[in-house]
Image (tube, rainbow, N blue to C red; front, side, top):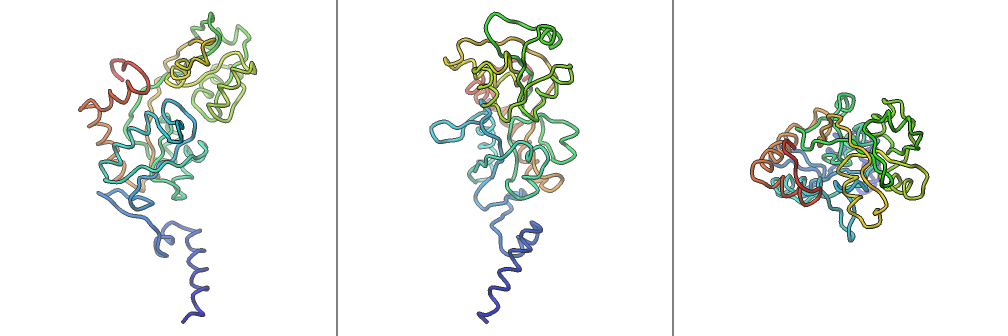
Length: 269
């Protein structure tokens, strides 16, 4: 009955737009591997927000980094390849990218927090992070109160814990949309110092282009990173991610990845 095909196609498209379940009914490309639901057969699709070195950034046309290498281990365990999708951080932390079926998990150097856990399910912690300041050489601040008293302009990345931490300490910050814009704000003199996760700043300071800058402060905020999956919808994938994190720590893979992207691994990391 050829005359009915356009109607059926339109109905299927409309249902797919409404729910993921309808998309499955109309013939999507999802799969279940080892109890983990994947939005695309043969791939572990990861949402991240670029650039955020050393966790994820583009080098030579390829996305690489600490998070990328760890999730590659998850993909290997599942027998698939990792596919990375650049996504606004706001849609990651609110779970909307996961809910829309854009990806299976999010790996974005994301701090585990109760307010975020309302919308996404976190893996076990995979990284211990601190906040740091980067600015011109010769300055050093023991606390953000000292930064405020010095009257310097502080830059932060929008929607990050670094920005929230600075503002919780009554430090007004100039907000930048991503880490690249944040670094550029420092280089162009729009701000005097920037607050960002310590490993990110450590990576920037390895670049000869940043030779005029130094670590101006380091603050232990008790943060731990986690990977995220759709809220309460993919326990099989969470289990596999946690297994891979534990195995990597036990067999030395985690240490090798840490030292490759960040540097000497501190005790307790």
